[in-house]
Amino acid sequence: MAIHTDHTERINQEGDFLGAIIETVVKRESSGAVGVWFCVAIEEVWDSVENTWIDWRAYRLFASGTVYIVKKDGTLNLKSIESLGKSIGFAGDLLSFQNGRFDGNRVRITVKASQSNGKVYHDIAWINSPDSVPPVGFSPTPIDDQDLRQLQQRFQGQLRSIASAGRSAAPPPVPTRPMAAAPQRPKPLPASPPQTTAEWAGGVPEGDDVPF
Image 1 (cartoon, rainbow, N blue to C red):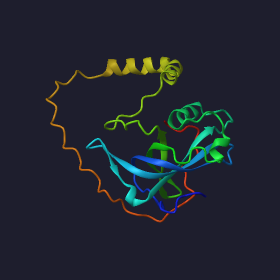
Image 2 (cartoon, rainbow, N blue to C red):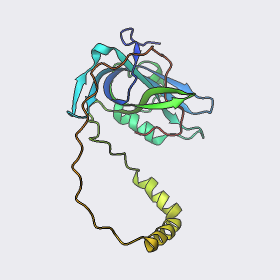
Image 3 (cartoon, rainbow, N blue to C red):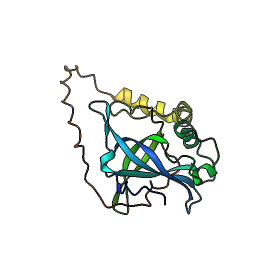
Image 4 (cartoon, helix red, strand yellow):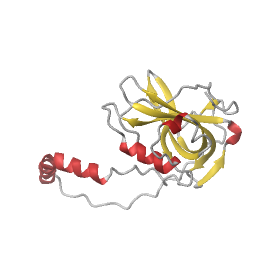
């Protein structure tokens, strides 16, 4: 693998990071799903308290993860493919991932923790363009309109029936109290994260969709 020898420690915490793509590999899972494995050299970390990027090049960290472009059922993962087009300029040529076309491209990545066989892994969960800014706070990404309409059509009868029963059984409203003062925001994490043994062949657990 073409991993740079000066980025030998895997990231061991969640967060948003800026970095440069070191390597991309197209791989096929036993289930039939096909994904693009990314390895990214971490250069900066997002400080959500100060809303600014902090230089982390001195820690020589890398992150890896897999973006699945073909699902287990053999259909294309449209959201992932569209996201790769926006974030790195992918034009639909799978061979470009094998010939180093995107090596060196800067990206913004979001690293999330997951568990597998009793171990905790920190892998790339989202890939975005480097000029994008992480969302402020902890607001979740809303479901897209098409999925929302499909859910509404599927469950509308049950939703209305259950909600109506709940309204009829609801107790009288309780007078509201003044809202308590917001707690103080936590301090930023220390600049130097704990180091762990390098692991080369990482990747998020296989799934049908990768949230972007």
